[in-house]
Length: 197
Image (cartoon, rainbow, N blue to C red; front, side, top):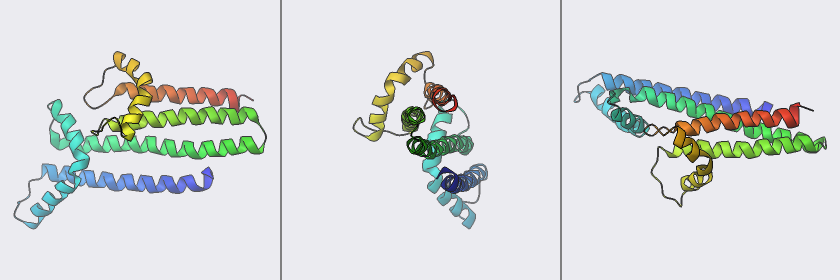
């Protein structure tokens, strides 16, 4: 299933990212050009800025806190979108990988492989929660929402790391470090239960 469906999903997501990057580069161009606001180009630039503002605003707000030119926000937005797409593709790949592995464990009646993929799935679910936590830093939410639930579930692991590495503005580096540690744990689990047979 992973071999047949994942490449299609990956292609669609990458094409969407490339379109988004093109829009952000156009936004960057309009940020630095100053077309006549009463001409067609100026009116189009104004409408285009309004349409893309919701994507650029969080990055612009972050840059403003450090006194950096907010017109550079589309570049930061591109970097953030690329990192998010990388993690989303990883999560989607993991879903297909887990389904294939669990299925193989059941079909081959191999409890050790099944247990390995089950543990891998649990860690993957927690990685997804931490990833959602990173996303939640861009939004305002209450405790009764999905992001509130995600915060409660990930606080025991993230808060000790935040004491060592406090967040920088809206960016929580401790969550990124936790993602790396969880990925290493996944590899360790697979090495013991699946590849170490």
